[in-house]
Amino acid sequence: MTSVYEINTWPWLAGLGVASLADVPGAVWDELIGFDAVWLMGVWERSPAGLGIARSNEGLQREFHAALPDLTDRDIVGSPYCVRRYEVDHRLGGRAGLAAARSDLAQRGLKLILDYVPNHVAPDHPAITEHPDWFINGAPEDLANDPGSWFAAGDRVIARGRDPYFPPWPDVAQLNAFHPGLRAATLSTLRDIAAQCDGVRCDMAMLVFNDIFAGTWGDRAGPRPAEEFWPAIIAELKDELLFVAEAYWDTEWELQQQGFDLCYDKRLYDRLVHEDAAAVRGHLRAGLDYQNKLLRFIENHDEPRAATALPGPRGRAAAVALATLPGSTLWHDGQFEGRRVKLPVFLGRFPDEPVDEGLRDFYDRLVVLRDAGQWRLLDTPDVLAWTWEGSATRHLVVINFSREPIWTRVRLPWPTAGRQWRLTDLLDGRVFDRDGDELAAGGLVVGLPAWGFHVLETRR
Image (cartoon, rainbow, N blue to C red):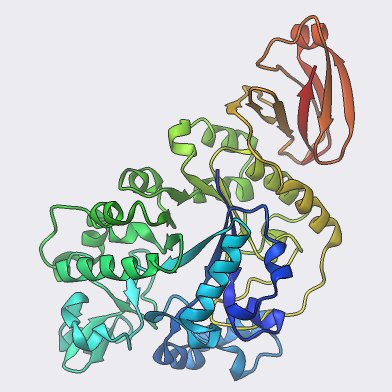
């Protein structure tokens, strides 16, 4: 199990009042001790061309002003997913600044994760002119008929980056995942990134699947390769990098088979936000060989803040589920303090927001919990319940994931008869003493309010 803490690097540094990753105070890194890895989102060189597009796009401007009412031009720094070069932006301290931060993290037992975007680059990336065949190319009539999907680059017409379900992104150029030169360049770039970090989070990793890419671009992509994009690349770097996939469209299993160590569990997120206990329970019936490679979250830079998507007690219940399930967890900077504004990734400053001290205290107690032993989902129709059984400890988690209070019985999956048992709630400190014969006969009686929960350490 890996616990990852995501930081939106540029506005985070601005909030600290420092100009470089090398200048982050040690006390700030100390606050992250207990996590396994820090994902510094958005360290690569941002595109001047992309910045110009962002400053002139009316839709983006409305989004920027909604998030930051006192917006100035200086606050718009460009998208971290419109990468001009895979070099650490000099405004964040350059390669030396990142190396200093990585050293500081390593001293605290923390690994460093960075981004990689396989699908697209900035329209002013050097490869546009040096290797135009690495991109999806069109014809002059494509540009004339659909300028929103194409742009001119010298004597070439290049596709704007996209996924098959949405209009093109206006600020990026579409790479051709079928081109052997592009695949070789990807490996070379990732090898250089591997020298600077411990893991990569691969943006929209499934877009370069042969089936998906062919379905999106058809004949424009050229001959379909015999091999998938990721397996050979990951195999070359498996000993150097942890590979994390941003995954959608139920492609998690396939990404795992292609070599990814962890994949986003977007399906669990959707069920926690929009569905009920039965839907969550059904999701958790998957095999542990699959679940152990999922990265679970209720907030990241792409999703609404948890304080708005999962407000109040429901959000706490979802967080308890997240922290006590098999697999890995992704936590987002600002989530613990109850930030409500989803900052567009183009912006370099957070708005001022009050800290929810009660929520912060809750997360301080929650995120230190660690799995211990074998996880087991319990068959409880009224609540979500599971156990962790180790050689010396047993834990029971019960969550009332509903709007109504509930009384129910939970049968423990280990022998209890003939002993007295003490159950201690690790989140609020309450202690419950129970007779083992009664537990064996009828199960543990549990009463919980709407969205209530127990994380119980059980001892004889």
